[in-house]
Length: 336
Image 1 (spheres, one colour):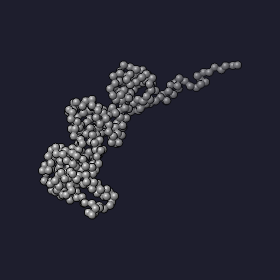
Image 2 (cartoon, rainbow, N blue to C red):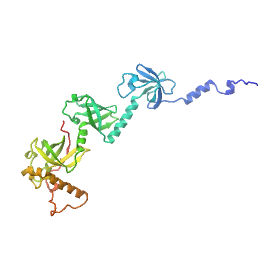
Image 3 (cartoon, rainbow, N blue to C red):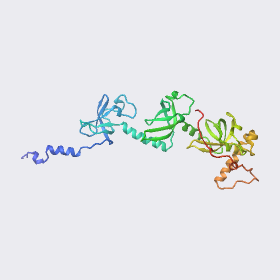
Image 4 (cartoon, one colour):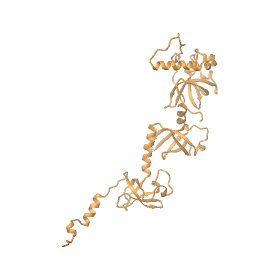
């Protein structure tokens, strides 16, 4: 049997051809790409990653996580395979710089946008405070709670380490703004137990020319001057004093805007009773509130109200000539 010797000429494929073929099928990497990679070597302040490039890529420790990392072993293990973000072009040695932090950052913004769209309540620990408010982390992102949206009797600096329920006020990735509200979360939680037509006991927290703010179980609603009585009132100060205890009826709830509107006018058995016989108004409050609820139900069903023969007519809110410009107040918690 004759053995034929194979030569390079017979194959028709030179070393130059092989090198050209490698170049042809070599991956082309660009900043912004997300690629799979395997940890090739752990370094004191980073790691070398095999992503299929001619030279192992490098990820510095500060790019390993959205959170603080003191040692690369906290994030990566040898031979581990995962996704990496290409942060920069090749340097003079042909090496790319990678990041995990950028991937986490993009996914965190996507998640908080989803949470905001769902109007979700999130919880987070305060890690720092400043003159303007408090700082928290949501999905690894730094969030800010303005002082006006912190509802607590504690000093701001004492909040560090405390977990707070929060609602989203602003989510803006382009401006790197994540603003949250502790007050809105508390108001929503307490408003969930309230309903229109419900009679509640509250105390006068503050008095303004346009009405009184009433604390009802930890949230504040507005009793507008036009909803105090069917009789004319010059100023709420002539009817109430701070800390007066009242029975009021809820006539409007706006959870999205955090507003509660209250009325004693709708609880008057006779026009002017809030001015002449407040005790009678409170005694008959549930009875009058039931008539109000029946009226709302009839209006919702498109029916006419029962006549005076079987039900006493409830005075209408439209009988008042008082201004209507401040019918609802932004509800606030009374823990401020």
